[in-house]
Amino acid sequence: MKNLQMRMFPYLMLLPMMIIFTLYLFWPALNGVWISLHSWDGLNPMAFLGLTNYTQLLDDRNFTRAFSGTMIFTAITVPSIYVTSLALAIMLTRKIKAAGLFRAIFYWPTMVSSIIVGLSWRFLLGESFGLVNFVITSFGFEPVRWVTNANMALFTIAFVTTWSLAGYYMVMLIAGLKSISETYYEAAEIDGANFWQQFFFITLPLLRPMSLLVLVLSTVTVVRSFPLILALTGGGPAGATRFMVQQIHETGFSRLQMGYASAMAVVLFGVLAILTIVQFRLNRGGEQDAN
Amino acid sequence: MQISAKRTKKSQENSAFRDTKQLVLRILLYVILALLSVLFLFPILWIMISAFKPAGELFAWPPTLLPQNPTITNFSDAMARGDFLQYFGNTTFSTLVATAFTVVINVMSGYVFAKYRFRFQTALFAMVLATLMVPLEVIMIPIFQVIVATNLFNSLWGIIIPAVASPTSVFLVRQYYQTIPDEFMEAARIDGASEFRIFLQVMLPIAKPIIAVLCIISFMWRWNDFLWPMLVIQSRHLYTIQLALANYSGEFNVDWNSLLAMSSISMVPVIVVFVALQKHIIGGMISGGVKG
Image (cartoon, rainbow over all chains, first blue to last red; front, top):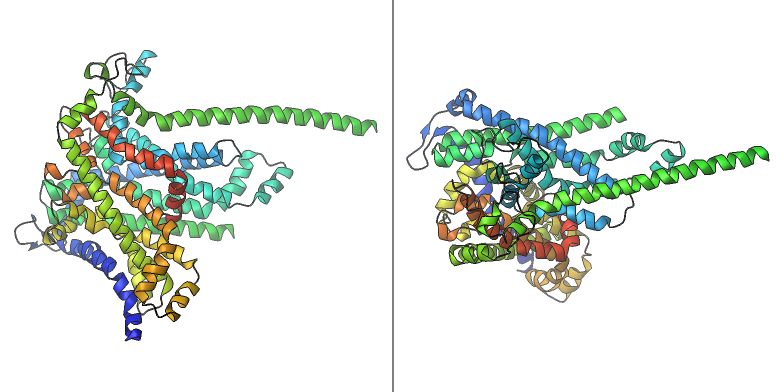
């Protein structure tokens, strides 16, 4: 009896978690692939279509626009996040006073909900009433159309996304920087290497594993961006910042094309998986070069 | 002699020059950090300051930095409309209940993964890992069907239940228990305690620090979450704060006065928790490796 209890115990303890994962994650994930092969409005019976939804995606201007928009946004934002968080991390590991305070200040935006981040920047960048344009016009420049000009809107959300996430990755990079042994820098100092030489020949190579983690995590996060953009631009102007998650949501729930939206979601999953694999591969290749 | 004296003098000049250069760089570093601090703090501070401005002053041109006639009408109006308190209550309820469930379920799982050897352990742990690959955004459409089928649509329980199991939390707990020696369990076993009692009375109290971390992570995430409420909630009276903010800000005529007041109040708990527990939060988030 005792033995049986002991054998069953782990499974009983895992049961609640496994039920929830199965019901609300694995089952919908598999079902999503199944739904993507159908035409379905969410109410009436599904009609099997095969891969038609996927072939249709290729010709769908709205989808290809959302897809390429997401990729461009990611290609701008991820490097911007990495450079910003690395710069912050390097400054804060330079034996300065109040490093803890600065760390908390830079980390703070990650505590704020994406909706409020979007709203507060929308308020600050308001084109006819915002403080930023007031400062710009008081210097005699034209007011900037932060969110109503398509290209500007892209840069605005890239900037605000960087602002809201940099602190998180900064803390990871600080941990990475602190794990690099001081002796490398001391030796470089004796050899007369300047800051940039130390940065490129010691810091960057030795920081590689942590950099990779930061790049993968930030990519996966940025590709999925939605609430912040919703609150800041609403996907506008004219759909210029409407990215994949918003496109999936609108297609599924506003236009009730559940099958079609599921096909988009499968593509999104594919993109996330590929990006993750590619970044890990790239890093492994780099390691071999270094050896 | 002469040569060496000369050399010393020269190296002294050099080091003096280096010292000045170092000092200038140092000051520059602090200036940059100070400017960046303003950039990182100001946007949120600005909406909180502006929330105290009366309607006429909010969009005054030129804008006023500090409210000339500070008022709390924005707050009292938001309150008086009644719905805001409702949103606040909904958010508080779902956050607290979800956090309690999150702690229970993930501590249970992390504990057995760390302390027991059983069949299919590796496969089950791989399943937990695999969930990281499937974010909610990817299963938005099919999850809706399950939410409806399990009777959770348009219910606060629909925000709470489906997201209580978190791989990140399982990792954190597992990691924590791996550092705790098995002797505690062995001693209790010899005393004849059941496995369940060992967990409840011996191992659970030891886990207080990690439970605190889980509570903070879960509280922050739930309080700020938007995607789950958006998918699950339809009726206005069940809105969470984030959902209400998003919907009101999407209206054609944005009521900034109420929005600023609502945003400010909703951030008070977050600010309090962050200021009080800042070190634990930053440490905990990082050992988790992933957000959420």
